[in-house]
Length: 130
Image (cartoon, rainbow, N blue to C red):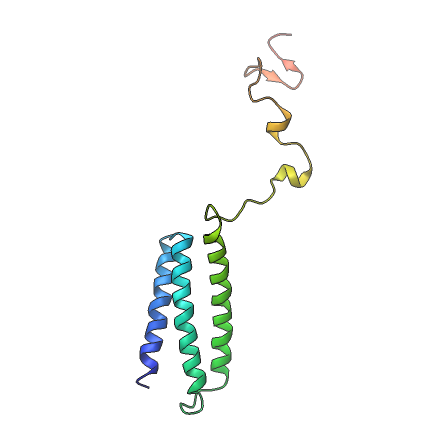
C-alpha cells in the first residue's frame, strides 16, 4: 500500500494539471506536453496495478477499466499533439458552405466594390428613380 498511494497521487496531480490547463485554454503545445506526462503516469500506475493484482486482491475488472481509460487518454493525446504539430496550431478549416452547395462564393461572383446603389434600391431598381 505504501507504493500505490504515491503513484495514485501523481496520476491525480497530473490529471488536475491537465484540467487546469483546459480551463485556462492553454495552447495545444502545452496541452500536448501535459497530456503526455499524464499518460505516462497513468501507464506506470496501470502497470503497477497489473503486477500487484493478485497480491493486493484487486478485482479483475479494475485493470480492464484502467486500460479503457488509458486508451481514451492516448487517443486524446494523439489528437492534441496532431493539432500542436500543425503549422498554425489549429485544425485546418473544412470546406465552406459555398463549396458544399456548389455555388460560387461572393468573392468570385461579385466585384469587391459596388457601383452606385443606395438605401432605396430594391430587386426591381431604385424606388426614387421611377
